[in-house]
Image 1 (spheres, rainbow, N blue to C red):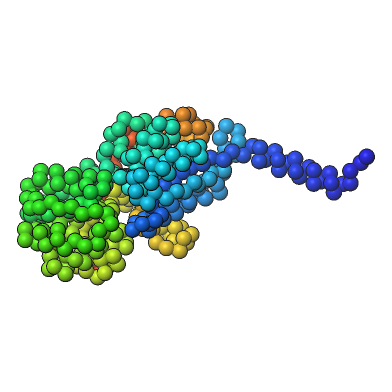
Image 2: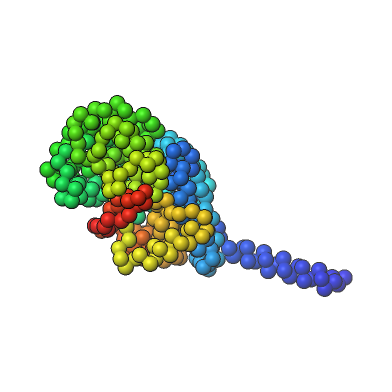
Length: 379
């Protein structure tokens, strides 16, 4: 019996479509950041950077091992909580992701890294700066920003040489990130001859700082250094003003956001805050970064918060290693990942033997008229 022509056409279309799908491979890229809690705005910013990269890769098209690739983002929320982070890490390994971009915080990145290492899954953090992350001896751990040693050192030297600071009080939120960057700043400050008049502690969910700030006020510091995130740094600035503490305020990339002035509710004086972002674009890379920011705003209807460009580059670096290895299998592309030399939106990305950035850049910022303004890009 002969089939009608229309049935033959449908059959042919089915066979062609089935063949195409058979040749397509799904490559899963995990992304983890805090999508809930006080710094959910930064976690969403990170996820948006990953989504931009995935969309660009799929639009360009990539072939690995003779098969067309479709990249798929598997996004998870760790709530900036170490225990939740390890649960999410296990979930991603069970989902057999091909690689992980994250986590945002050092305190979540470090415990999760052991799980990825145990399962042979490469991990690139776009924002974790605690040196311990890459000092564990895991071959699959990388970061695309400078670490706290570099960041704390740059801030310590700036406090001494440019701000002429004599006395500093240090506060940290006891997280791996906050304590780490505060410790590194303290080392650099001491080495530069600055007197540390007090060290106080809070936590990453605190809202009342009157006790520790009152203790600091009596020491009359020229500068207060805070190791923590903007959700705590903003209210701390408000209470400093209420208590009449006129010292400058300094911190790392955790406070160095466009949202800090609104979180401080108008309590920031022009030039009062100096912060450093673990990364930075030198003059030659400004056009690429400006284009990224414009594309981001067009796609998501909001400005880049902080780390989105580094997340974007981290995804692209991972995809580039897969392309060079002609495989998305972690065991095959990991060696290429270690040999990365990639020109990204945030600059040249190359890793040392530990997985840290070679010659990582840092950007110093202050705030004028409620807007963040760049001071300098340093190494």
